[in-house]
Every structure is written in structure tokens, then in C-alpha cells.
Image (tube, rainbow, N blue to C red; front, side, top):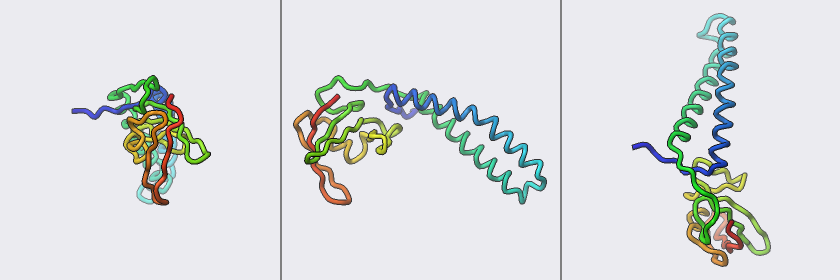
Length: 151
């Protein structure tokens, strides 16, 4: 049975854009390989090895993205009074506010405010409502978040 990947519509669009860019790089990588072949002996040709490695990385990522897109389950954003997959959550920590989007592991990128529903923060927030609080154990100790808004 194929694995289903839960992604947002925005995440699907980002993956499609990345896929197009990677497919466009195929010809550039092939040109690098051809150019490196012209340098002679392939057994001691660092440029050839680097170009082949780049080709492997590009092809692996293309296959990975195609698999995700073929087995994607698009999640709807917002519209719930509880925190669910696709929710945008505003949290209050003391007098500081932070906003996170709860996404599947495929799209998670904490630096962009996208946290996985399988992460410690995502697990602690899941199912909570506005006004609830959630305590997360971090390497620096416990942190208590108050749910200020769910979008």
C-alpha cells in the first residue's frame, strides 16, 4: 500500500514549482557531465564525479517529489474551532506572540513557521481550542503556550 502524504494546497504548488525547476536543471547537469568527459580519464576526473553526483541528487529529488504529488492528500486550511492539520495558530508566550501553520511532515519548515503535526509542538497543540494552553518540553525546559487565535 502506498503512503499517503498530507499536504496543503500551497505545499502542493511549492512542490510543483520545485519539480519544474529540477526538470529544467536536467539539461544543465547533462551538459556538465559531457563537458567533464572531455577532460579525459574518468577514473581521476573530479569534475565528472561531481557532475554525476549532482545528477543523482537531482534525479532522486525528482522521483521523491513525483511520489509525493501522486500520493498527496490535500488538506483544507482553517475552518475549525480546534487545532487540526492545516490550521494557522497564533500562540502567546508571556507577552510575545508567534504564529505557526500546522502541516504534514513533508512541508514542515520551522524557519518558515510551518510545524509538523508529528513534532512535539504540533502534537501538544493538536485538538486544542482558543484559550487553552499547551506545555511542551524543550531542551531548555518546559514552555507553556496559550492559544490566542486559530485561523
